[in-house]
Image 1 (cartoon, helix red, strand yellow):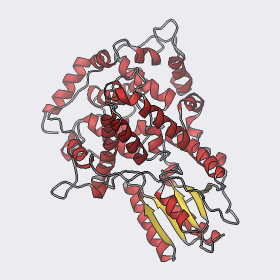
Image 2 (cartoon, helix red, strand yellow):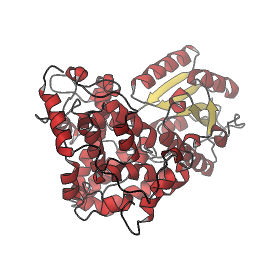
Image 3 (tube, helix red, strand yellow):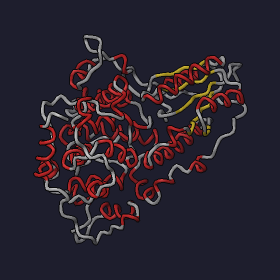
Image 4 (tube, one colour):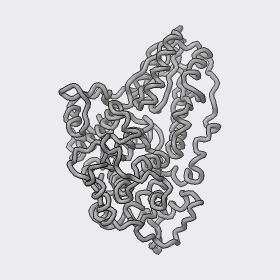
Amino acid sequence: MSDSKPTILWLRRDLRLADHPALVAACKTGGPVIPVFIHDDSVATLGAAPKWRLGLSLADLARALGDKDSRLILRKGEPLTVLRALAKETGAGAVHWSRLYDPQSIERDKGVKAALREDGLDAQSYAGHLMFEPWSVKTKAGGYYKVYSPMWRAVKDREVCAPLAVPANIPAPDHWPESDALEDWNMAAAMRRGAAICEPYQRVGEVAAMERLHDFTSDAIVDYKDDRNLPGVDGTSGLSENLALGEISPRQCWHAGMRARHDGAKGAEHWLKELVWREFAYHLMDHTPHILTDNWRREWSAFPWNEGGDTPEVLAWKQGRTGVPFVDAAMREMYVTGRMHNRARMIVASYLTKHLMTHWRIGLEWFADCLTDWDIASNAMGWQWAAGCGPDAAPYFRVFNPETQLDKFDPKRAYAERWIAEGQAEPPQTALSYFEAIPKRWGLDPSDSYPEPIVDLAEGRERALAAYSDRDF
């Protein structure tokens, strides 16, 4: 055993062992490493699905650490208080963690770092959740990027460091501190019966994420540029849930995509662009944090959206009962799988904010409750882009037509039939599972008639365009 003091590794959204700069640095100190996850306010306020999915990830990471003769210590409380207590219990001399970029985390972490350093501890934060730190990507004028395409051109040829290997040894302390039991946190409480329906669709943990990356870059990435838009086809990587929790790093994904491109996979570059789209979301959140709560384009503050979340139209949208098959199939996919196809996300967001003239925050909050791949930056940027008040270079007000979009991207109705049971003589289990996953209070049954559209698509579009044309908003 080294004479070096223990290092506490404060884990958050970096739930893996490979390509983990903070873990590698902790192991290099030569002393014991004590991994800890803290159930603080940021965890307590998570939506039902992301909190449940986080619990699954923590259980998997605990097993992985156990295989390395280490442990995951679980504590509940305010981070600084917990870390100070843990340092006192263990005699730790340092605390390491991976950086987060939302305003609340930044404020919290700055306070924690300053206080721990005043206590005489070596408090260090590391990169790991992104390929490019937001402040490291600048326009020629020294500002930040407000449009995606120029940012892609600025970073596409940058060197991305090779992923770090799993440390050969994670030194353990002679005596482990006490830990909460994960089951006592009851992370699945708000999911209720939906957890059992959703769980088979999750691919949890680092090993599953790496297998998913390998499978995708060995096969589906070839046709990714076209297939990613087809919701009835398994044409995407599915890695959003793993990236959201740091079960895999974006650097690992980038290098796998670059290898595929080098090997001639024609869809590889487009997938690399999607990785940078994620970086763009964090870039904007860092430079314009109001994107999380307010219109990114300030001039949209008076746009006449309905801000009531309890209208019959909004309820129909939430239930997947709008009478518009593309919208309804997408919402039902989310309840059964915890995720939603990206093309479908654009359609349901456009429909809510434009055809129903409902504020994007209502949709953002609903997704934050229902998505197992919820990501604070991507969710905010996606909703604002779809609503029209976000970072979109298009010189027009985009209103997706869900019917023509379905004709274009699901012409054989494979997606719609997979998720909508009503009207099918023998609906598939995927469609029936929706009724097993949703709240009982909704009182819905597969024998119900499929609803008529709650709003005429042409009328809804004209209403949205008229509101946009009124430059008084």
